[in-house]
Image 1 (spheres, each protein chain N blue to C red):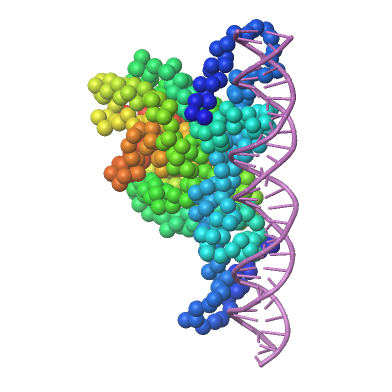
Image 2: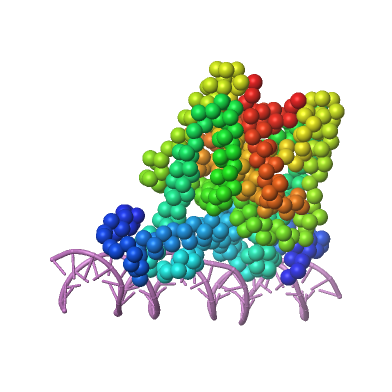
Length: 225
Length: 225
DNA sequence: TCATCAGGTAACCAATTAGTTACAGAGGGT
DNA sequence: ACCCTCTGTAACTAATTGGTTACCTGATGA
């Protein structure tokens, strides 16, 4: 079971009537398992997720899960990889360098916050993977080749801002990226305990909007000359 | 099993020779279970933690765990409560209002960062509790009574800073607190995936020191007039 | 049409799991 | 010294778990 994903691709390459509904559809089954696994791992973590539960969520049985993905850990890794691929794909639509430096930073902050907001399972998977100290991420061959172009673009935006005197000379791309990610991640990933502790719902739209504006403000304030 | 903690207290109130080493020491056993549970839950989350593992880590057997804490969930809640009590206790030693407004904010930022750095299991427990949407925290009677005085003190510090024209009028205590916590929490809780993705060790002292300074800088920059 | 094989169901399995039961004995009070 | 209770060990239990085996059949190609 060294290339289960390759198998699925080969099957779909074969011709068949486009309007014919199959009783068997390996691609559909596989995708359903992957989607169900994403939810189950996101909700229960790696240790708490149950193979039976995933199979049931996917409307199939465990046998197919082992057939396509090998075992629980490989399935988890595949879910994690897909989550990273998804955000990298979304990042490619970003062009923060085509704006003024300030606008570029603002766009990055908004993109990151909104991506996190719209993909809570990504945050949850990050939490789980860090609980296990990036144990599976470090094994991923696939993700080794998958780089984010964002830090590079961010460097250019910051360089432009520094050249025009809008940003401070010490503004560092990694720090700016981590600052934005920190503000978005913490608020959303810890919203439940924070809402309980502070006795207010951090997830109501007004609070989310306010925090979005705050992220932009903090980020720009930290780098403006 | 509604007051297992009360039982332990009652036992220790009895007189006995202070230099006599007991074969049985309920207080010691109980504390060992609590410590072991903290580590096990912090490392594996609620779903992945194993009762047998906790008992073994504590150098006792499961029976004692159920004896003192009732069941796995009650033990977990107790661990969580103790974690919150610990940070609240540490906060009481803080007096951010006894300084200049800027110094007060700086002290809060440093305290929070250093506390998170020194108590990684607290971060991990927060992650786990949020994975389960504060399910147990919301049930805690004990934590309902335990308020943090920090937001109040922070309000006063900010008010002083505004009055003296050092801070902007829109500086909000909750936002300032969340900003500081965000920067500290994300960096530390996600250090494993971040270090893997960026190919550098975020946990080496030089990087930790740099991030500490960055937190102070970002926080102050976001509220300075 | 027939043969083959991958996709699929359902039963099975050994180990693990949270929790329970049976019993012993340390420690303290009378 | 005796008695009682709490603290503790170890065995037990029913259910669950990740994974495997046995067998069926839909889909496709010749």
